[in-house]
Image 1 (cartoon, rainbow, N blue to C red):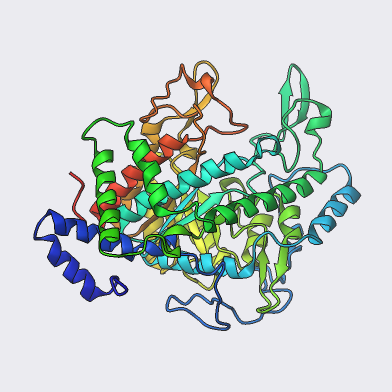
Image 2: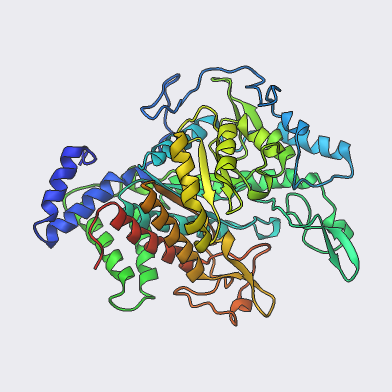
Length: 527
């Protein structure tokens, strides 16, 4: 089993597959073992050798750089504050510069939330995914809130992401990289800087890290001290996540038992039940032949955090220079992304991101042209390092089929190394007649199907999925097995921002993606 991922072993496994159902179970078991890296903690708690480069050309410990970093296209050197010389969209206007400076200094004196070794570990895993050897699963709340913070909420979302990871690992036969929109996803872009109600105009609510939702002048004031509170809540969230990921809560047998609870809600003989039965057979077989499923490989997991890089004073305050490499890292999260509204080539957000060593993401819609995408890639990843840049596609099913092929073709033509993932929720938001913002499960599924279809046609790797979701039983998106309707939206509509998939809807999507990945990787379908 130690060499199960070798070509020789895989050929043997395919030979066994042709015999009978029992050997089909062996085949699935071996594949689950081959992908068990998805449940094995590495960089976060292990040792990393200095000054080495992986076979995917990812520097685990990059050589030292100057304190100012590289120069921008305009010739200006990079620093954690150089973004101030560029156009900063979606930024709040603070009425007290001294109060803002004081909040930034307070955060600068705090410890980093994540560490360079953890960031490099994620980068290495993303680099492998770029080569078709992994799948990125990103999920979490639309926006975190101060008054919703509690251990149960974090646990429930963490649990559903891990459950999805088990299903996707089995379906894709490759490691699943689990990243939560957590411990920093506070700020949100707004369509308008101000909100008007009954003739009264106040600053728009931009997330708890900036102001509060109540429509009063005091609540809507852009308050720098909120950044400090967001830092401390993020620190608590990360402590909880680290405890859950290494303390036995991530045990693969427990996760599968939770998945069986989910499929009990489905019809007898449904594809979900058949899929779950195959996973169950594989786990039983492993135990029967003496594989220790109580070992750390099966009871612990890597789990990373990410958020939109939006509030640049906060990101700047948590940007630290690694003492062993000289590289700058944004230690507010393992990964950050730039949104559709802040990805202009002259933007402060791209300027900030180009100088940090974190894996980066950029969201694109159907408005993005092939030339524009290549320019963004050249800015954010000029050295074309695998795993450095993830392209998050959010368009809607029809536009994915129309626009995505040209973007992939341009990337292939220029030889750029990126990881393509789908955000099937943002392009499918609508308002109901009774005023609720919602998303249709069927539309989300259709966009995912279009995403996979296009990559099949282009010969590229559909490398992941990005979902706004929660582990709670909310009624915010309609459809799916949970049978949420427009009439039942009001039952448990709790979001402060955009509608989220509930735990059952998110897990159902994982089963659907896993089935598609089985077909794509040449595995027999679950019948």
